[in-house]
Length: 205
Length: 233
Image 1 (cartoon, rainbow over the protein chains, first blue to last red):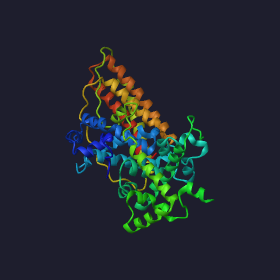
Image 2 (image 1 turned 90 degrees about the vertical axis):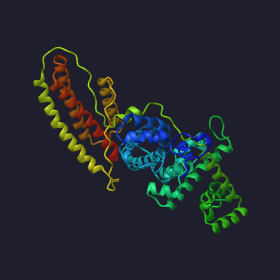
Image 3 (image 1 turned 60 degrees about the vertical axis):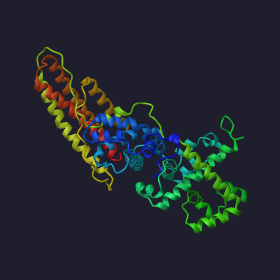
């Protein structure tokens, strides 16, 4: 898994991957496993921005806070299953992905979100009436259909491989590749529209 | 659709290579197919343009920031959902104990809590997906929290749990009604205990029962939160 991308992003998980095992983490994990809430809070403080970033990308800003809290509660509950075979940050990241995907599967009863349907593709696709939206790449990512967004975020932003995404999301490698291509094909239209030039008020020239 | 429209939409649409451009970009194609697509790209301006745009998308994704710090402190919402024993602050002195009022009320509340807990459990089981996750390791037991103003901690905890429950509330209305009735009954009993303790602060039995009532209230709220979180609700 490639979580490290660039020197600017060497924080949180990325820092973990590039700097080797964190003795800070190891100590706090050991204490948290014994029920030390303060040690767990230190872990929370260290990773909350990174975990919330993941939640924002995968589920949208509106649900990010809730999912971030869910992820840390789940981490606490499963702390004893962390065996130290990977970085704590990597373990937490993967656990968070699971929490988010579980939530999205069940969230139709709780939240309105864009389903993986043709209508969603149309909404995410750029059109003349939606030019202002087209220049906002992050908003465009948010508006991708769920399946395509999850794979795009995990692969192109978070650095997971297709076989890892397939294992986490319970899909085939072929589906993962297909969803990624689908997401990119939608997003390229946003970039193309932006490159074509939009006026300050977002309208096409 | 004319040729230009086809190009704008997705390269040579009739060309099966368009759907392989992402795999090509990621280096996921076998050597033979990679050579074939490169040969195709050499003679197809439309597919080359799509490939360039896909590269731009990947580059933009790589520049997206990973961190997104919350705008409010999320820790209180996490900590209240971890099991942590609460401490009670010292109670004011003087007065006689109206224990005779509090006990029946708490007994009634306890019965209601038991019913509600059973109902919440039943609903939770019904809502739980068929493919349940592997068994979750039991939550570690938290060491006693450092001394803090107990009433404030308790009220904060309850408020946060209530906020979480209501933010996600799509529980069965009947469950919600029973939940609220239980909470009200427990509040009433606790109010009586507090009155009694204000007059008889040294009464260990009163104090113990108040702590028990508080714990039951927290447990009830935690169960409701767990139901909304884990039951896919």
